[in-house]
Amino acid sequence: MKQTIAFIFAICVCIAASSVNAATIPAGTTITVSAVSSFTSKTPVGRTWEGRLAQDVSVNGRAVLKAGSKAFGKIASSRHNPRRNDPLTVELTSVSVNGRNIPVKTNEFQPGHPAVTGRQARHGFTAGTLVITPGTLMQFQLLQPVTL
Image (cartoon, rainbow, N blue to C red):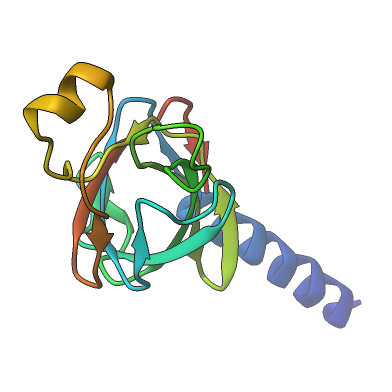
């Protein structure tokens, strides 16, 4: 009987601890990510990239995502297709929390702009290839709340 009560008590403690650690990050929260992997304005659409959170993300004064946590994204548009001249845009797709990848929905971010000559501007083309190197900071806003 005492073992059963101790077991039930242990389960209640675990459930209470997990609900205390649960948090919801509201839509509109800014998440700053530092690129870990390199990619360019000619990287194919859909290719993934890796980053790390550049700063803590807090909810009600409590850090729920720690700086240095892994983050993952994908290329939303690029100049990979030579018949299209889309700017490089990326989006954040997930963040790692306690070893779990939590999906996120964010706005698209357009890092930097390659040089444009007058003639290219008139015809809608850009010059050169934009290279995103490790350490490049990118800011995303959550479009939907995220429950951890």
